[in-house]
Amino acid sequence: MPDELERRTHKRRAEDAKQCDNCEDLAIRMRRLEEEREAGMVLSKQSLDALLDEVRAIRAQNETQLEIMTAWNSAKGFVKTVQLIGRVATWIVKIAAVLAALWALLRYGGHTPS
Image 1 (cartoon, one colour):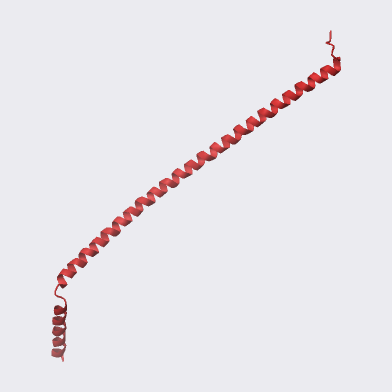
Image 2 (cartoon, rainbow, N blue to C red):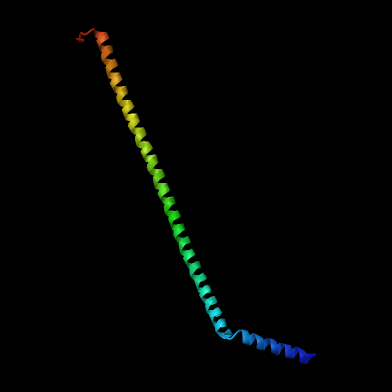
């Protein structure tokens, strides 16, 4: 029985050798392809890490810009409020001047006090 098993093994190896004339070349190519794939994966990971760093930097910059824009909008709102108060105060002063003139006119009847 062991002779039969050994004979089958030799026969299978001989058939395999006939089917694959360039097995060593194929193995070398496969190893080279695996190495290239590994190198490609390392480069891809490095590229992704660099992109992730850029995204983080852009996100930080956007947050800073958002803070600046918020402060700017608040300042614009403050300035508009101050301008509105100034316009209202101007109108109040004008109305008070007209009322004071009318009051003086009615009080003194067009005569100046002596």
